[in-house]
Picture 1 (tube, rainbow, N blue to C red):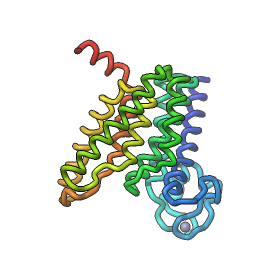
Picture 2: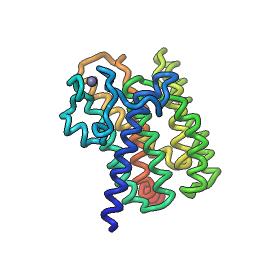
Picture 3: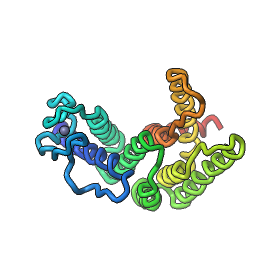
Picture 4: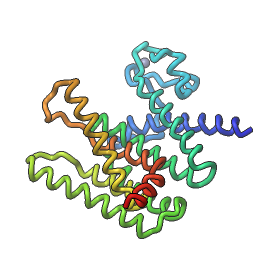
Length: 256
Ligand SMILES: [Zn+2]
């Protein structure tokens, strides 16, 4: 029985991943509704049949090609669906059934959408982060049991830290390295977890960002001007904190 419930929740998460794909494609395009019209092939415009819209499975059955025009369908679609399902399952294992699972899943879904939009367009849409901050405050205080003061301080310190970095980076290098989107995103993350999470998130995101950034520059051999979005690494740090944040804080307290 428990296995069936688990499977059911994984399938639900994969379907939500399918919806996240729609958000990733449509949110950056101003004025496009995320509910209407139904999904169409971006190449030939043919509406996707309902039986071709099954998360992951349809992509495999169609071998990654549109049934109508035969043009390739991006691997990103099943990837996002699979990632959402995997995150849902990991969160279920971590939080068990209940409101914290729901809050954490909604939070992670927002991070998935932000990550892929930032990778594609180098922007973090305010339409997600600005309502995201009060929503994260409510989830933090009423569901995740974060004291309201810690959540509020998380927002202020999160925004303040990156704002400070952004201003100094621009003053030293004379170019814009970090956008207002990153500032809003770290404010949102700090709000959800409380200010104590920020050290971990900033460390994780800077380290992973530096490693991936250097690797990318070495591989591609491009100049240092190549823009690498920071949002995905902030999201990675936040997901890491979801799973190992508490043990990390305890370890830090013992060391201190
Ligand atoms: Zn097509």
